Image 1 (cartoon, helix red, strand yellow):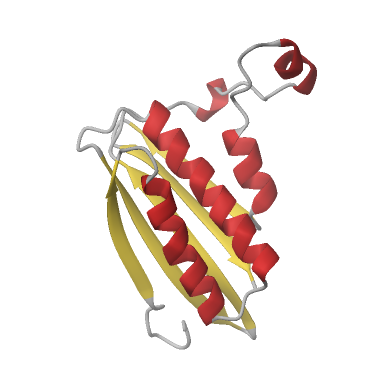
Image 2 (cartoon, one colour; image 1 turned 45 degrees about the vertical axis):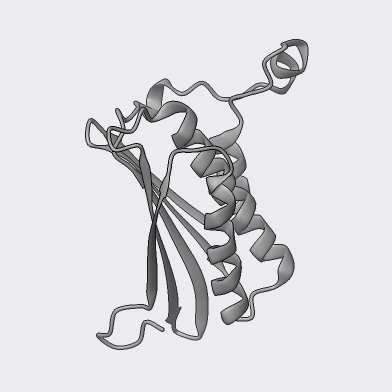
Length: 145
């Protein structure tokens, strides 16, 4: 774990933009959550947020390399432990200020029940940082043990 000047343990993987590949990523998140004895509920929240992040990238990023780059890191600092998951795509990026906040009434009245991904991610994780530009999009998510 991250103590002193040592880098936190991490696992990196690249998955193709293809149906069901987000499930491969959730297995890694679960293994690392179990390693630090994170509760099953918290592991499930990380897995669901990760599925949302992957599906968002699959649907919207238009990745030049047709891949998602994932990095999982374990941290320990001042007696706290957490799992950090980074989802990086090399897509077209997006302007966060133009993302419309989802509206429940509008969503229920519509045939299209989409647009909740970022909201779901933010509600499930303890910290979420999203950066995006013409180089792609990076979602950094943290869940404390």
